[in-house]
Image 1 (cartoon, helix red, strand yellow):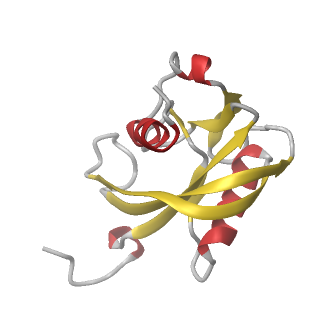
Image 2 (tube, one colour):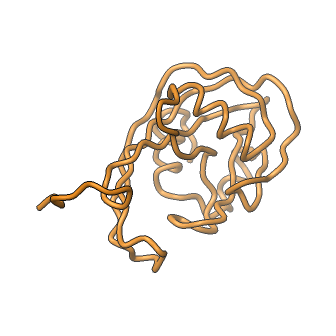
Length: 146
């Protein structure tokens, strides 16, 4: 049953991400924070109130990786519903995440903000990394990654 009083702790939030390629490598970040702490994923984050989605995508990728992109079309959508299995300060969370295709424009990879690490990952190295399930599904379905 939904809560009777809406607070910042019990609303569905919008998350965004971007799939960015340079040559034959995809831009991934190793997550610093839950959910999926320590796993590799496409970079992304939260949409701020009144922020257009494509603006949020470009901002988050720049903040986490130092990479400037041109945001293109949405290519994948999923939701995250967690009941605090990871013992975070949050009791639970609910995100709808929209991932976009994006074109690399400029910049050198530099992990920052919520990213513990950031790198261009080729298909061979990808096989040996701990990739979060949604990223693995997205890259397999849309880009034929293993």
